[in-house]
Each structure stands twice: as C-alpha cells, then as structure tokens.
Length: 451
Ligand code: GLN
Image 1 (tube, helix red, strand yellow):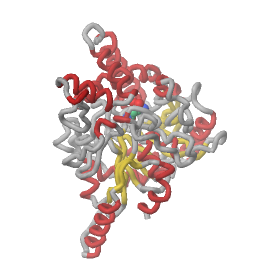
Image 2 (cartoon, rainbow, N blue to C red):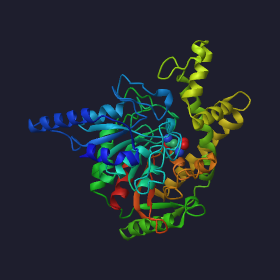
Image 3 (cartoon, protein in one colour):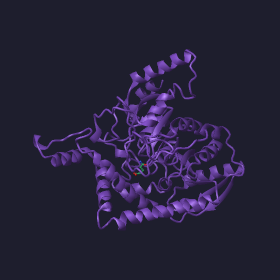
Image 4 (spheres, rainbow, N blue to C red):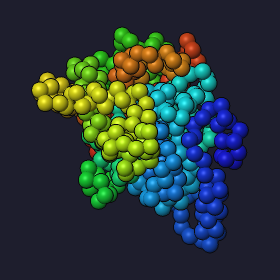
C-alpha cells in the first residue's frame, strides 16, 4: 500500500531520492513468514520506514543530497539502519534533503526540492524535508532523520508531523554522513508521539562504533507516552522565543497547547534564556568550522565523483575540479566560512568566541532546568514559507532556526508535536519541548499528554 501511495504522489511531492520496492516487498514477506512460524517479533516488525539519505545503507545509494556522492553504493549500514532492520522494520528507500543537511527548506538538495504535501508551492522544512513529507503524505508511516540545528523538528513543525532530536549521544551516528560532529543526532519522524517513542526505543542505545555514544540504560519511551501524566509538571515558557518575529497564529496555537496542559495539571512559568539570541551567530561559526573539516574527505579519491580536467591533471587539480563540480553553493559558502573561522589569526576571534557563547547557552539551560522540568517554545517562527522566499538571502534562512539551535548547542533533547493549523494560512504548527540531557522520557510524557 505504501509503495502504491509513493507511485501515486511522489511525482508531485518528491520526498524520495531512491525507492527499493522489490527489496521492501521481500523483507515484508520474510517478516510475515517469521510471524506465521510463531517467532516473537517486536511491535514495529513489518512496518515500513523511510530513511534520510544522510544515513548510509548497504547496497542502496546514499548521497546526502549531494552530486559528489552520486552513484556511490555504501558497503555497510549505518547503526540506526542496522537496528531498524534487526527490529523487522521494512526500509522503503532514501529521502531527499538539503545537501549535506545544510538548510531549512530542501531547496539546497542537488536533486531538486521536496514539496510540502499541505501546499505544493511551499517548502517541507529542512534539511530533512523528504523524511517529514514522506510521513505527512502517507508514503511512509515512520522515517529517520538527523538534527544538527533543527532538521528533524522544523520539518515536523511545517508538515504537521512529530519529530524528535534525542539527547546528544543517545542514538549512534556510525554511518551517518557527518555534518557537524558536536551537534549531529539521529531521531524519529512520525505521525504520532507513540510512534516516535516506539521507533526511539528501537534506535537508541550504546554503540562501541561511535565514540560519543552514551553507555547507559534508557527507560522505555513508549511507556512514557502510555503513562503520560502532566500533573505537577513544571513547564517553562522561554520568554525570548515567544514574542517578536513569531507569526501570530503560531503563537496562538502554542498558547492553546499550554492552556490544555495547564488544565491537565501542569504548572506554566516564564523562564528567561538571555543568551539564546546569540545562538544562531555561534552556531553558524561552529557548524561551518566542523563541516569544513568533515567534508575534506570528499577528495575525488575515496568516494563518488571524480572530475579530471582536460583528461589529465595533478592530484590537486582533480580534487579542485571535483569539489567545484560536486558541491553546491550553500556547501561552498559554509566551507569558506568554516576554513576562515579556523584560520590562524582568526581562530580566537571567531571559533573561540563562538565556543564561549555555546557555554553561556548551556548555562542558560542549567539555570532554567533548576526551576522547571521541561521548557517550551514554538518550534519555528513561521509556518511553511514559499519556495524562493529565503533562497537569495542566506541570513534570513539561518534566522528560521532560532528556536531549534540552542538544544543542539547544549546537547539536550527536543520534540516537536503538532498543535493544529495557523488560522491565518491554514498551515501546520508545532510546539517544541526541551528537557535536560538524558531525560528524553520527559518529552514523550508531555508530548503524549497532547495526543
Ligand atoms: N537549518 C540548519 C542548518 O542549515 C539545520 C541543519 C540540520 O539540522 N541538519 O544548518
């Protein structure tokens, strides 16, 4: 049924870069056989899933939205993919994304944008617009995404889906094509909070192949949703993310959701996070610095594309020609920014200062979580914008991430849950909750209470 749905709508939505229907049908049939033979299978066995193209998949193309990886077939699976296969889920294919996960609209994909199923003239968010659109368009019931500055939560907000960025280190990033290693995290994109929790329980856990993977026992997120109870829960509304620059309908739905939680026994308090306003500036130094280093491996020798100028050339000429042809404008912009910020003489002024701001943002979280159990804000300032609206002005695109970036800088978990449609344009809106590191279950508790 999902393959039929993809055939019917993906020409218009373009959520997928690659669909492997044959293998999906074989995998599903195998699960049916195992179930018929009496094997005890997990709750998601047999359920189809879409996988963001940032995760490498054995025998299936993995481009991270870039021309430079066109045609590359990885020899292994990323750990989250290994885990979903082991749990009996059925991978349908790979979803579209901004090139190397840089963007908020999928307009930076080298393979053309994904369209928002709610309005095909609008963006589905980014960078994981393909995963969110596939779920919103009923092409897949579940998807995997990656969130470095909001790429799971913001697409969820603009497509009316649920998106979770787990605690930094909760889900292995082995086989996730790195954007910014101190910020990246893999997580679920789904239509309900319970679905997200069930998928979270499958993908989280220690992996010796990822040195940042947390080695701890996690409680069941699905249990947290099923037992959802917000009585006595202290919810802090972040003052700095609830005013100027936020669309009225986004704020209206946000406050309605808070009132609902209050009626169910939660206590709503105002909390200030005075350094959040500097987080975009810090992020757009730290991220390009790390990305410029991570992308150095695309050198025309090890993976994908190789362009040889005039049929010959030195190693450096081949490398330069390949990177010139293989990387899009946003990737080049960030490599230039990042190498500049890291260069001798500027390192302290830019990268060093950004790291200090990062510490201040972390302290804002510490101070806030001394007073409340979770924090709340709208997930993004506006509903889905139109294609082209922010493309010419990178800074206006970057400002869209104001509410989601602080969580990545501090490594704390976040969830975006749909709260209805904005009255002025009829487009989906999400509420974001943030919790202290390792307290992901609190997000599922409060998210579950809204379902
Ligand atoms: N929009 C942000 C950026 O462009 C977030 C990216 C992400 O989370 N991968 O960097």
